Length: 279
Image (cartoon, rainbow, N blue to C red; front, side, top):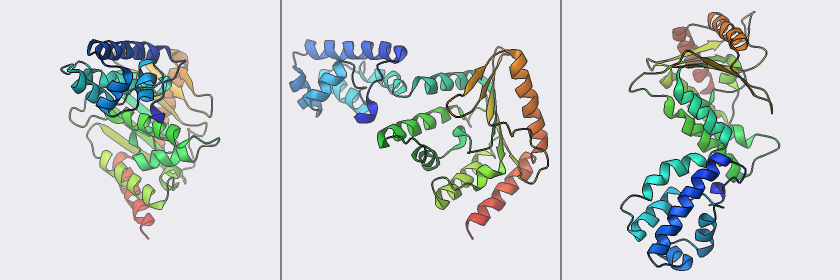
């Protein structure tokens, strides 16, 4: 359960954990079970049960399901799985995920890697494994799972949100995770690019003009008409809400879309690069 250790400096996660652990303890005590007896019944060690009830570890979904069954909670404990699963992700990831969920339009320019909402698991893992200073294996896996969890907003069935991505050609050629992973990642781009609410455009390296040389950024346009911008840089990503700043990036994104290939031509370009990886 190492990767499910609770962050003690996260107030939001702490509030959820206090509620969950209080309920687990109350249910266990009402059943007349010691921590050791309860652990044996759900096939976890006494130390694990103690850590969960003290808020030191976030209980996994299977832990909650087993507790629900053993304690006869009738689904009341299992119902906490979604809230508990959310708090295992770092707070900044949860905040971003919530904002993305509120957006009716998301626009993103990337010049170093494929955008996180488009990444396959192996590609994301390659990014975090290459980070220096490095993550532990458990930390890297937590980051990967957090990134994949954000992809829930890519909803093909309703098309209620609009997504626009401009990817620098370099991101299509950088073999993060290895050549086979890159091939699978490009295939994923081709799949998503055909969804009716997603546009993916490629900005070729041979373009004389590129208005995104300052770095990657994204725009989230919310239901109330507000725009939030994220400017990404190592150790200092910045959130902007001032219209004076967000308007600049909104204009810049429009220029980048004009400089890039059309969505249809971009599909053909990605197919071409994919073909090159097979030779």
